[in-house]
Length: 295
Image (cartoon, rainbow, N blue to C red; front, side):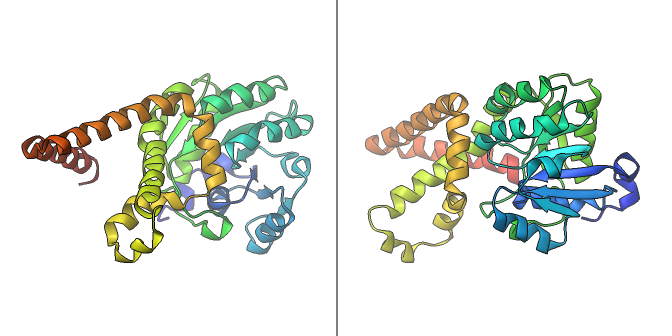
């Protein structure tokens, strides 16, 4: 990332301690940026011993453990970078150590409403500030080995503070801005409806395309060109992680999937009627919408 250390928050975070729970692609990339941001100490927690060993070997942290209390004790900023479904239990495990410390907790979860309902109250009851966040960065590949500096450069990040004017909300916004993100505040509901369209639907569509194209006979894939590869790329994402995302955001996903089905029915109707003129209009509409975003 081509941003000088003294320009990106060193005075804000100098002398502070960062704890990352879940040093995978996103969590590991946060740790890679920590020194640039001026953090005095970086720590990491992983529930699996092999995860602890990997992050220790990486040299990214001063301390790593499968004991979450030992990792978050005395931290100024804690980042939850674990699957959404694992966050409530992790929050409960942190409370005895973080109670009354002034720590600020944020996360990288792809669903915010479910987290706000199950994580924020647990922490708030113990006087712990939580500000949800979702940096829209990463790829279908996961794990610490895929982490890299600059992953967040220019990425959109949605934060969902309950009180946008609070000191914790301001710190979390500056934290993700210092990481390189373009930060926007929304309610948790607005976030979930937005990502259902721009993130979760594309994944679901890639899954359905892979199943339809390759399910009957995967051997036909040897004849495929780049179109199938590009269309189905994100279907290679971690199935257990995406199960959690889709289940916890199902309330926002169902209406979007209904729209997707309606568009499929629209296309099928045009093909059944052999209506080439209307079909071309549909294709041109899709081309225009796509190029408006990516041209």
